Length: 200
Image (cartoon, rainbow, N blue to C red):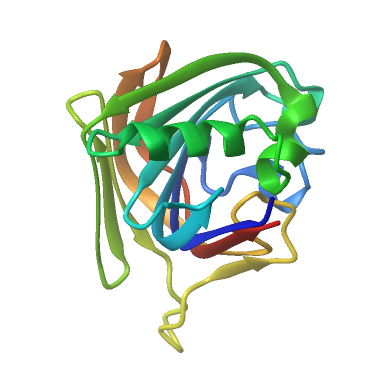
């Protein structure tokens, strides 16, 4: 089966800036005694098994040990509430790791799948500012950090990350929420933004 999806990616995790697991390829522990994350993907175009995924938003919710490489993650997936049954089924196949791509690479790290749920999900971006909201359950706002001399985004490159090898670093001003039994929040937390492209 060939498939492809691409779009925009947004992240908030429970670390203070900047999450050590990114620059260390999961060899350095989180800044807390746990890692909890909200990984949001807004698909602009693509298809899975012949099903158009245009416009689908999905959010991977993660609860992991401080050292993510230890595995035993709890993972749930939220999709926006206008996702069709056909799209949700296709996304479920992708997230299972059966058809390759980044979800397959993460498979050995997952100890418990929490399932998939529909919720109203909105992602807005204006310039370097973005906001991700999952109904009344989770909300965060962030700004991509820029070099004050060039006004270009500050980036991490060469990353081992499901969204891609290059991430724009963001400061999450405020984050709060609880969803699928995973709760975290705070001020000035770690965030990232990038464009993503998955295919197999």
